[in-house]
Image (tube, rainbow over all chains, first blue to last red; front, side, top):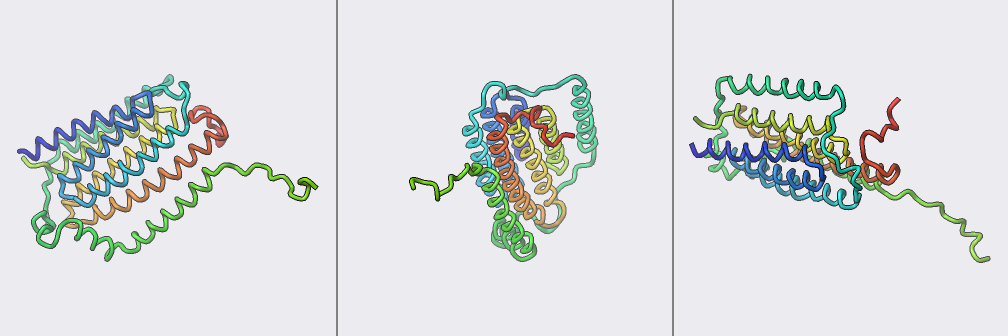
Length: 182
Length: 101
């Protein structure tokens, strides 16, 4: 009963924050609402027993990615023409209604299905007995999914190189050194 | 009545819809990137909620990899935003039409 009440309260806050993210004019407001949403998603992971995922979510998403977003918003120093809310030209209202209708259909189909409760041997008690969620997820990551792990680290290296190359200032024309002061 | 998979999937669908609407109707490139992050989080939520029912913790490992990919994509996307702003002075998606035919 408490679990259900907790889920509904976190879910209500999360939906509110998500709607605020896409509807605010100021990108800073949207970024702050997104930080709150990401933290609430980490709370949901914690209620599901995924401790490692919750910690990594707070550290990586709310702590690194959103800080990066806020830095870029600060550096860009946007003028008011960029600070507009959602814009809907002419026929796009139809697209909006179709999107909402489509996802509403999915929501109704799922909400009326028979509830699927957690099953299997990976119950929270069994995981606690072995040594905790982080240990089990870590073992699985480094034993079964070692290739994905190494690929992910290589991908990070690629992203570092790519973002530095893309965001670097273009080189100004270098004056010829043979003509200086001779 | 315990919290079932359907609860989490309905919530993830609502989050995903918000992200899709943000990508479609926001003209600021930074807002589009933030909406993409919202969509990725909705997918992560489904992964972790479903990993309870699939008798394994593969969902939680997948979330780790997805977060890595999302971080890389955010970094490269923001680098592109900076480069575009430096070159064109705007990051409104209406005006950035160099690749359009």
